Image (tube, rainbow, N blue to C red; front, side):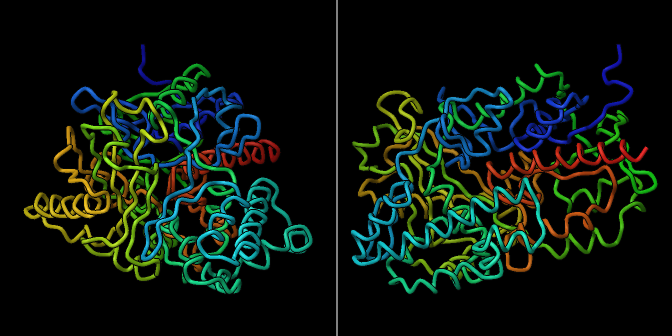
Length: 510
């Protein structure tokens, strides 16, 4: 019996969240789908690993766009609609901000969040709530416009706030509310998850992040992020999707400007009407298209013109005592010596010591995260890609341990506990780890940076002209919606929708 069919409707390259989302949506519409994943498990960085007999979350801090069971947001609703049953746990707070002169824990809910800032910076409640309401209005517009595009005239009538703020940076809009610096600082910690300083970050992007996390709260799966990918893969196979692991796609086959299949590392040539790629366009257009002559020069110019966003450096520890006994009080802590986001962004171009860290204690969001009497504690920073590209092979081990030690020492001083004395297991994840495990371009997990020149609105407007090869779509963090696991699901759905729309248009044209 042949390993592969003679032909598929769609081949999906990559079995992480984006690829599996594409496969689920296509299978739901009756399409014949093949997913090819280079690893022996699905999920990409939505994974876990075992050390010393303890399962440990590999990457996920918080999942956005889930919502309560009776009021799902788009990602949570997609999982429900597809029959992917996940036990979601709501994170207990938005975050704890540890900043110069500030130690404040903030909780989700627009009014609650504004009241808690007002308690620290009196007289700011109305202005902060007004800003948060503006973010929420823009968030609602983005969600509606992503499903129901409309003319600029109609947008202005129905989505006035979205239109009026679309051309402004986050800094410009926040400055217009004339808030004291302390209040602005407390509104800033999430910046690192979008990978640009506020003077270059579109307010639209800030609004989506702020309204989602603060307005509705964030969630984690009880069985770690691998629960998402394993259950998505299981459900996809039940719907008829063929998923093959340890199958590395080397080439995307193109003829007369149209993709028609792939070739794997072991030499299998597999044909399909469409290909959806989780590999970055940088890799696809420079080394995966066969023949290379099918790559338009505009495609190379596009990838050269886009700025890669952030990668990751994490120290993940299993500690030999409870969070309470170790003085760990908050699920999520953002710690920095400044909230000048532009300055912090520049700092992330180097190799440390890093001035801005985010720390997670999973046990404070998931009481079954580790065995009794222990806890999981991670310290993360999200550097720019370019700094770690300068590390030579012979220096890698030394640099990795120096950066990890600096991060552990800083949080030990903060907690008043020498974390080194309590480590049962430790894993250090670097940009090189990410690159080796996921094959992400230069270890970049956050796609292309959202800037005033290149962000979701601009990308939606140029999407059609950037479809350089027919029947080839892109999903993953590098696609239109950008970074994070929630957007990866959205990007996978968008790629599937593009395929379905093209199929319908071509059928109608016959």
